[in-house]
Length: 294
Image: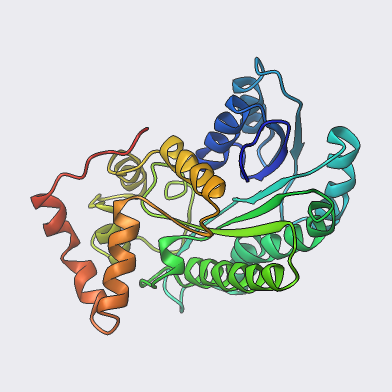
């Protein structure tokens, strides 16, 4: 995709984090927006941030798990914007707890948002995207879609699933010579609210998640603050990397030095990777990672 001007992009999870940053960056490039989030107040804040741009903006506030609402969304978007060119499946949640601590409700809640919504949105919008001369589906996985850590089983399954689904879809689109391209995004540690808004089944000060993200806090609230402060990359930086790679048609998008490092280490040392995770706090103390903000 050469540019985003005169295009229409739909973004889930547009009320904060990477979703909001994508909306702002796309608006700066004259791309109209259909913004989706469960939190209407946050959604309106995002809309206000792009209000002065000469683009069309619609907001759609509902729970992405509501399949009836999702089924109605393509018609709503097309009635307002007359076209759809890009779908960003970006909404995400996290459930933190061991396998024996999480229950069926946790699994259903987590996977409905992390994976099932991605599949449903993709299958619903794909026929409309294929009507365009060039179009894109951009699905957000995670570094935890590349390797697994303890107490993140639901998140790991969801993000591995997004990776597998997107890669399979991409091959099918290539084989059919479709005008649609499928991209999979693997953010590293980005300064968002996902950790502080996680559903915690338990909390331990020294665990693998804390090692990856540089948190060593006595409670959830402080850990959420540290998670955001210690992030080597900002949502704005992540959005810029995503859009740059879409223009270059790079279908596998790693965001941040940390994502590239973890990806490489998990490939080189698949059997001993968890041992590497535990020494990350020491590595962080030796090297101060430059914060990616532009």
